Amino acid sequence: MTPPIPAPTIASNLAAVRARIPQGVTLIAVSKTHEVNAIREAIAAGQRVFGENRVQEAATKFPALKAETPALELHLIGPLQSNKARDAIALFDAIHTLDRESLAQTLAVEIKRAGRSPKLFVQVNTGEEPQKSGLAPKETLAFITRCRDEFGLAITGLMCLPPADEEPSPHFALLLKLARTAGLPHLSMGMSNDWQAAIALGATHVRIGSAIFGERI
Ligand SMILES: *Cc1c(COP(=O)(O)O)cnc(C)c1O
Image (cartoon, rainbow, N blue to C red):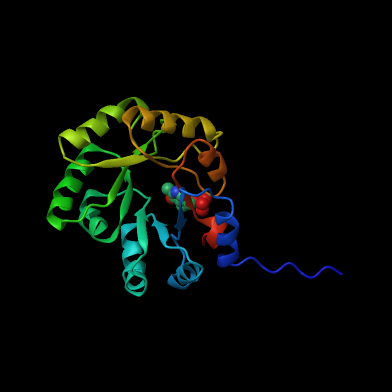
C-alpha cells in the first residue's frame, strides 16, 4: 500500500510555490480574510512579504505581527480611498493601486507629512472594464509623468488585474510594454491561477493568496 499523502499545509503550499518562482521575483503572500495565526504559520515557514486588500483589516492584523517580526513587508493590493491614505502610508511598504490623480495628490501630501514613502505601483485597467479601477492603457504614460512632475511621486512599477473571463497573457504583455515605454522596473501581475504566465511575461511581483492559504471564507 502506498502511504497516505499528507494534507497540504500553509508551509507545504508555500514551499511548492516558492520552488517554481525564479530568483528575483517577489512572492507576495495575499493573506486577506485569513487570521493572524494562518499568517504566523507562513512567517514561521520563512515568508516575509504579505499582501492585504483593505487598510482596516490590515490595521487589525499587522501591527502585532510586525512587532514580532520587524522584517515583514506589507503591500496594499486593493483600492485605496483618499481618506485612508494616511493610515495606508503608516502601515504599508508598497501600494499597488494608485489609480487616479486625486489619490496621487493626497499621497504626495501624506508622504511628506509622514516622512515615509511606500513604493508606488500605478494600476492599469488593461481590459478597460467599466467596473474596475485603474488607468486606461492610453492614459497611463501621461499619468505617470504627472505623478512625477506635478506631485513629485516616484513610481516604481505597474499593476494589473486581467478580466476574469479572458486569457490573461495579452494583458500581461500590454502591462510589460507600458512599463518598458515608461522606463519602470517593476510589474505586479499574476495570481494563484495565472502567475506562471505572468512570470513568463516579466512579472517582478506575483500576488498569490488561495494557492498558499487555501480558499477564502
Ligand atoms: C485576492 C487578490 C489576489 C490573490 O488572489 P488568489 O487568486 O487568491 O491568488 C491577488 N491580487 C489582488 C488584487 C487580489 O485582490
